[in-house]
Structures are given as structure tokens and as C-alpha cells.
Length: 213
Picture (cartoon, rainbow, N blue to C red):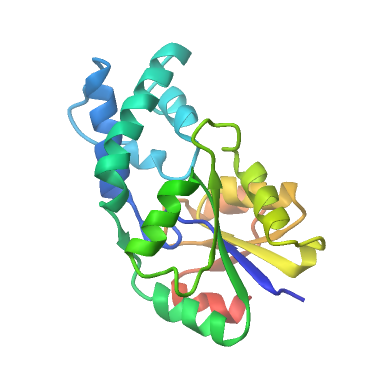
């Protein structure tokens, strides 16, 4: 029986497009790789940052690490709050809380920023637990974050929890921890991406989630 719901943050609870793409543009400019526009930078939403700089922007390891530092510089000051809560999220969270479910965030975004975002946008009243990446990158892959969340919440039986997310990393991270995952279709991953990763249940809108959990 499910007692706990783990939510991805970016693309699942909030739309971080403006802040993440602005931070990426800033970082690329600082390392001399300025771009004309933001085409393709939405791919930064979800995966670990270093992976995105390497895979989306074609940067080598040293350049990617430099860009990573500048990204964090912008994001820590401005980007984290260039964000918005998806319509219907507070109502959905309230319905889950009324059922007595325990809600938590499990995100590859640094935990310190994630807590600030949850507080800033009024979601902390529903979600008391926020589990994220470390600033030193020792915990950044989604499987590791989910494992950390399960340990933090004292969940020993995977059947007690379900993951909710919009990208393949959420599905694969859940599978690595023997959790089921509900794929949301209003975020940044396609249904095909989620299906290919192993998702079998989908929510077209936040209002669909209570009936699926």
C-alpha cells in the first residue's frame, strides 16, 4: 500500500524554463560559447547539469565544469526564483494530504535550492520533506537521490512509495530502487521517452494524479 509520494521538482511541480535557460545562457557566455538563442536548452530541465553541458552543448570535461560554476553563480542569485508552479499543483497536493499520504520531493537539483523554491512558492505546507542533490556532486544521479529520499523517510519496502516525474531519469531512478513511477505529460519529457524508460502509467494534468496513486 502506497503511503508516500516522491515528486520530481522541475517539470513536475514547477516550470523552471526561464531560470534554467537563463542560467545556461549566462554560463555559456562566460566561457566564450555564447549562443544566439535558447533552442535546445529546455533539455537542461531534468538531467544532471554536467551531463547537459556535455551532451546538449558539446562541451569537453574542463569546459563543462567551468560552465557548471557559472551556471550555479547565476542560478543561486536569480535563476532559482525565475520559476512558476504549474496550474493545479496546490489543489492536487492538498487532495493527497487529505488522504493522509506523506509527500516529498526527490530531485537532482541541489537540495538547498529546492528547499528555497518549495518555501518561496508556498508548497512547503504540503511537502515537508525535500531530498535533493549535494552541491559537491557526490549525490546527483536520480537513482541516488531517490535512494537517499527512501532512507531519509525510513521506507524499507518499495511498495510503500511511488515516484512522480516528467523525464526518463525519474523512471529509471525509480526502477533502480524498485519503485513504480507515474509519468507526467505536462512537463518536459515526451510520452515516448517515458514509455521507453519503462513507465506504464501517465498523468496528462496534475488533477489526474490523485486517482492514479
